[in-house]
Image (cartoon, rainbow, N blue to C red):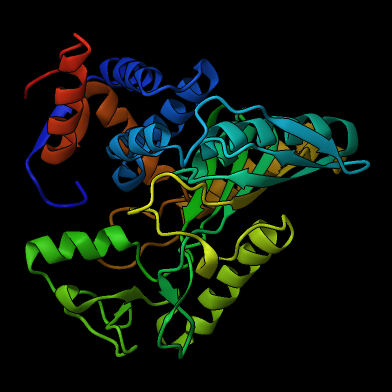
Length: 356
């Protein structure tokens, strides 16, 4: 788990049911309960625990406080041809982004590509959930979102970009999708928390002190470095691309203008943007050609020569699918703090969960 704490294994179905019940009790409508739970469970199943069920207490507080509208009215505005804008009414980010990707897929069926800008949204969790939703419909999905600033620029000495994720999902005939879900920072902040709790030094060039000095001491880390270490201008450039698509193109707040996710203000909407694209391969080549090309690519990748000590060369998503299979058998790990909060909340509703 992310923080190195004691964990409890809970059944997948139990967590899903609990999440929907607690969100509903907090004032969320059915669409919000389903979408937020779907996004968190995607992350928990695939091992992205920082964006999994441990976010539920935060989402409950955001809905109860008014930061997130638990009963939004989503409104699409056609932009002409293959594009649209979704006015999300300060919805939970998962509700808005799943809806936007669904519209993007519909547009891609008609035009070969569909792009949807999302306005007035909120934290959407793991970007891969939305890219995967497209891939499961047989099209290529791309999802981006900026977030409150926590990452310095290359050579910078202050927080500027968010971790600004990029996710891409590609359908693979007869197999799990190719799934890339990455932050544009050198490491996720969750890694800093983990290393801080374990007393382990951070990798060089991944985090900085408040004055911008590189540090390997997790306790000193105040901001993250962009992806790329000495070549961090590449990570900063990718983060900038996400910023432009997710904030500038949607007319929403830039990363350094977004209120911090942890609060303390849990009443004011954060005005976040996001952007999704769906691409139908059949608009370019036959489906058979596309499927064969993906097969050749992945066969070549996985059979390529391995470096000494490396067990296997993996495609994006391979590690996550393996984790999902294991957790389907063994259960979803929940850290002790999250488990305590969920247990207290569930017992108040007469829905006790496992006590570990």
